[in-house]
Image (cartoon, rainbow, N blue to C red; front, side, top):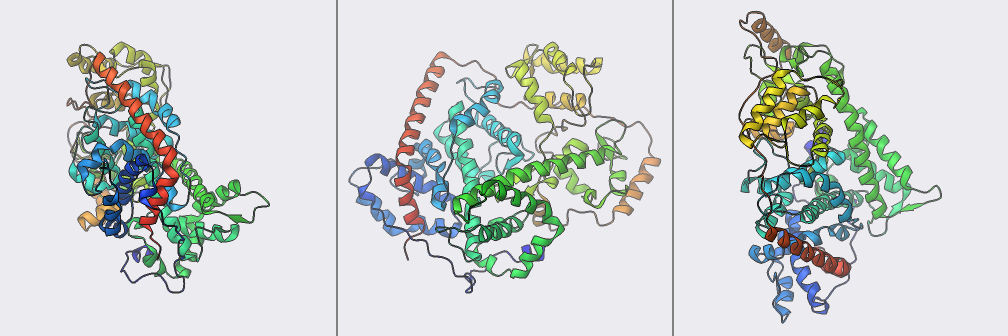
Length: 595
């Protein structure tokens, strides 16, 4: 904590003992590029600028030599001025496609596989509600991409999750807070007002994935400079291992968006070495060493920067799997004092129960309420909802300013199974009953017979929708919570919660998210429980519906337009692939000019 507290930069420059290694760059002439490359370059440069550190991106946007180079061209470019957002929006598909290759600027190859992403998204795309154009609405694609990243590895991309709002909501504030991911979707919303097809959703997913990777590479380069290594040359396996160890102990939970070479240089070597030997990072370093061992051949002496970057990716995926095991352990501990098979634990027990140190539950009531984990239906007996708590931000680990690793909700597998069986966004109550009665979970044995209250509520949900139940609405999610109270989170209404990490909570409120007097609070709650009158609602039911997107049948005209859009996007991708090397040499020459 002492180390991380000293991360914000003061602009004094890097540690003189470890001067930054200059990056050799060869100048590239804009007028020597093919016309198509110039068009794509202009758009790409804007997007790369938005993903660079503020000091670099501001300098890049203001660079007079760049403007002069653009004016030098005799032909009008589609996006002739980087600061003209309207021009950029008209070429947005080019921007997102180029951004998929953004990792090249930092010394690692981008491994874009749009076909694989499309194949992964396709089952979800087929069952999500479409608008009248036969496309996913903007809110629906945000929901789809959130689920795509969560089911892959428990990654939460900042700006994609609902954060307590309705999925259909659109907020300029969120775009500013979420930086590049929200800004990218905002621009794409302007470019594609009718919605997204599968290919366009895959492009956006690929773009966000590689923007995260670009940020990881930027941080890794900073650590290389700190260790006195040249990313362009590489290093021995031993030197690379030392740099990677520093990287993985500095990133999780730290002030990543504030970490730069100057801030890192102010951290004493002994503090970083102490972190490497601390109990907190033991498992993470074990995962790192395993990833290095799997990547390095026995006879290999040196590692390139690109190889080190692949080790980083492998480490985070390995860490996500380990973190998933920790999440299951937290759930198991909570279930050991569950209240009446409700998927809840009394807050009094949450604070008072003797638990192992790693399962010490300390969050205060207000923070639990904002996380969306507290059931206060019975005021005299507040309870913590187990699946909501396990998957909440309090159990997430911040890896970069753009993404976190969180607990994968067990609801994802249950909902995906129902979607696959139904094959669309709507199902009859009888279909759902037949599927759910045969669907087991970690805590529910199947086959089983659903009680009449559950089946009647399905009928009630279906009545406003011509006898069919929307699978992606709040009421069906609530119904699933009743059917699987330990796996499916309770869906609060939009605006009732405001999830944030403990660090974000402390910054926003100036108050610690932890309860300092847990024993006292537990005693007060126990007194309330003992003197309460009236019955306790086991699991509450709220009849307010909130639907994701729209449910329409596409017209023939919209289907034809969709086919034409897909061909246009494919053409842009071909152009980008052909010219990507040439393009990013130009981008890099402006981003890191020769000194």
